[in-house]
Image 1 (cartoon, rainbow, N blue to C red):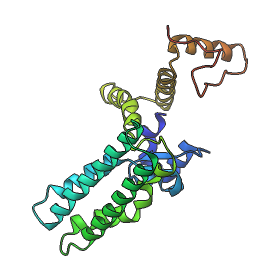
Image 2 (image 1 turned 180 degrees about the vertical axis):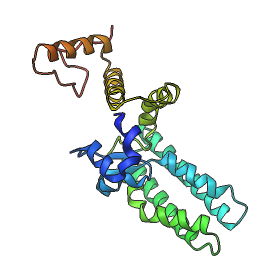
Image 3 (image 1 turned 120 degrees about the horizontal axis):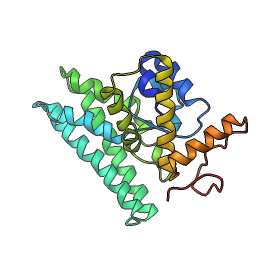
Image 4 (image 1 turned 90 degrees about the vertical axis):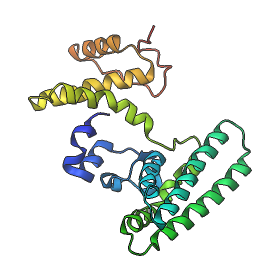
Length: 228
């Protein structure tokens, strides 16, 4: 969980591949090139990051600024329509129709952005988004998929703060320990498990040379302690 914070920039795509291993699900990311090794059809670009990038275009006092403003409005509409659908305020047919129209409008404005002559700060981002455009809409094929990676960033924030305030590690063993202990704590919290009891159980199993109990995919595993 936390290994990538330290190492993702060191080996780029190779490090990301090692971190993900045989992961076959959909990855929700920003547009960092390190994730390019993951199949595009199983990658969802974070709409929050896209909106932040578009806001930089929208803030400019040139023709590209107007295109950026319209792209920002369309991106926010995508999120709003998705929320309305999850709140059961839209039928599936109406939801699909709205998304189809939004996607067409978003593509049209990106194409318009690539035609802004002598405005490379508008042209280049629009070209990049057009190239990655299919990855913006992966959620349409995977109902319930989040449109942003905000949950992952919130999970990483305590680790990043700890790394900054504890003056890093003095050894590779210390670095490995920090990655592993915070991964266990974060996973246990996410699953609703008692972290202290879980660590004691895992340590006892290791000392007794017994098989380590795997972490469950849900919260109904009978052998793991729950938070009281």
